[in-house]
Amino acid sequence: MIEAQTLPTPTGPLALLCHEGVVVAAGFTADPHEMLLRLPPRLQEGGLARVADLGHPAQAVRDYLDGDLTALDDVEVTQPGTPTRQRLLTALREVPPGVTIGYAELAERAGLQRTAARAAGAACAQNLIAPFVPCHRILPSTGGFGGYYYGTPVKRWLLTHEKALAQTSVL
Image (cartoon, rainbow, N blue to C red; front, side, top):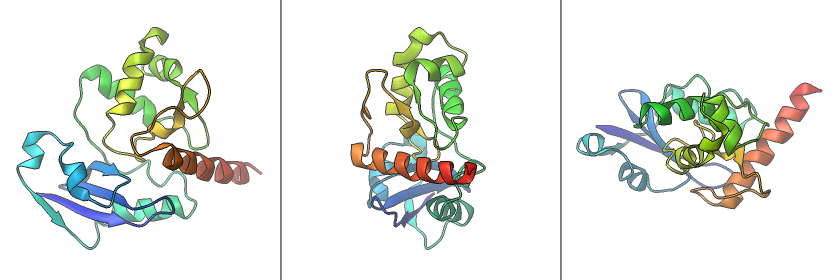
């Protein structure tokens, strides 16, 4: 059984889905079922139950929104993928709040050649656990915000939130 909670955020609702206490999906949508459909069939089969409070993962989101930019870091997450995809997702989680990098640098941080920027982009595009796996921190080398599954305004808000708080924590 997948347990789901929808949390309010300044940029819209965030659906949070957990399986046995581990976050398996999170996304800026009011409909947790939309996120369930992106999960592997074995997880979908158990069904979806809305709960009032998912505990630690939900509190981590609230803490992140309240200014603790590292609150999401210690929440356990899992998502499918090849060993290369897993290395890219791990490297994504290691990009600090308030910092942005390009796809080629993400590939390099994952132990791949810089030419694997496309693989890095694919990992970001198929990331099931935003913002816990912060693909919003990856920007195209051509400038601008690039794409984001939940839309550029959400990506812009996340980056602005993090940069403003990261700057004040350094002062």
